[in-house]
Image (cartoon, rainbow, N blue to C red; front, side, top):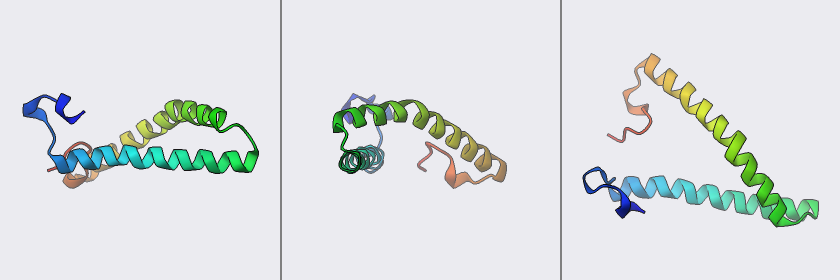
Length: 89
């Protein structure tokens, strides 16, 4: 995926690794949460995964969007230059 980025805008390997590792850790967390919940509830793990995915894709994204906007507002208001989203210095 990294090589699909335009060459002049391509992120350094370290930053690319940090970005992709966040996604991998999140996927592992969801996987183990689904396995744990399916053992507790005796439900089908696939249906729990579907419910989890739908909630994550709707409510989760809404919460993340809201959180990023709140933190961005605080960072701009307090002039914290090291905490700007997407700026890796």
